Amino acid sequence: MKSSNPKICPICGGTEFESKLRTSRFGTPYHCLKCGSGERQRAIWKIYDKIPKEILKKSKALQFSNDNSVDRNAFASFEVSVYGGDNSLDMMDIERANESYDWIISNQVLEHVADDTLAVEELLRILSSRGVIHINIPNPAYNLYTNDWGYPDPKIHDHYRHYGSDFLLRIDKALTSAYAIQVVEIDDVTDTLELVYFISKSFNLLVQQIGRSLLTQKCVVLRGK
Ligand SMILES: [Zn+2]
Image (cartoon, rainbow, N blue to C red):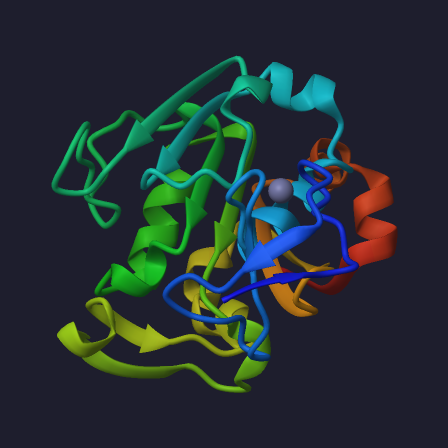
């Protein structure tokens, strides 16, 4: 189904959207005909538009999965790991030295990992002292509690769980020496809420790295201990 939409894609300025194999969670077209973006790409684009470019330009990045939500050219270097494919890394046992990366991106990966707390501990281990972890998971804004059934369900893309807004509480054990903030953004095309969790070893550095404008406007939960 193709329809005109008075809303504008923030990435490319496109104004036409279609439903491909699905619709948005509100039943509306989501796929930008001009740039191919969906809800997640547009919301994350808006978040990164507020992050200081000079910070990204100095950062050595590692991304899990071949996702296109973040501009790879914005970073000093950009390594991609595809589990079971190119440069495969197991997020629960990452074959990299401590403090190897300044920016680690995980979009829609943790729901495929058996032990997500262990995975975040591993991400923090390979994160530099000035580094930032970016985690996006499916739809945490729309459930209060995570439902973890403990196995990869083939009926829903081998996910181990449906996440809820308790995500940071759930991985609390991994955050004993780290700080996390939850940044909420809306995709204006579909009115869908997307969250990115930013995690760092220092709160002051987290503020500097992701930028004050983002924190003051978009930060809804601050957690760390
Ligand atoms: Zn677009």
